[in-house]
Length: 103
Image (cartoon, rainbow, N blue to C red; front, side, top):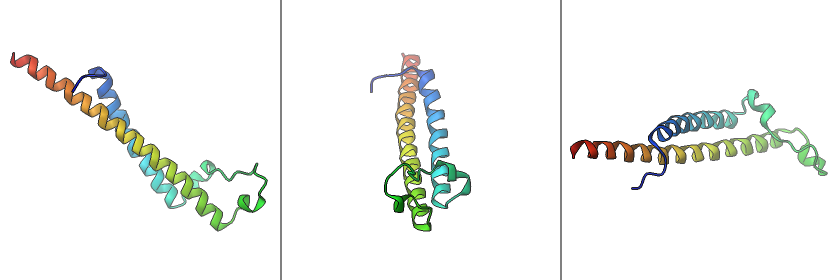
């Protein structure tokens, strides 16, 4: 495989991507359990014309928390993909260094 990014950047992206994926996955789990700390992050859409969709009811809270958790899990997947690609680049760099030492 060809090297796209340097070894320092691939190491940095591997660690930061793993950290981001773990944090977003944890926040997604907290949103699934309707954590009060994430109440400020839900978007009830009070500027809409339909007042029934913006009333704070149990059903709407479930819907809003579900939307937030879905977005958080999608972000965690993006971070996991970045971690995988950066980790692959890290392996490519270390293999090329080991190959150069053998020669």
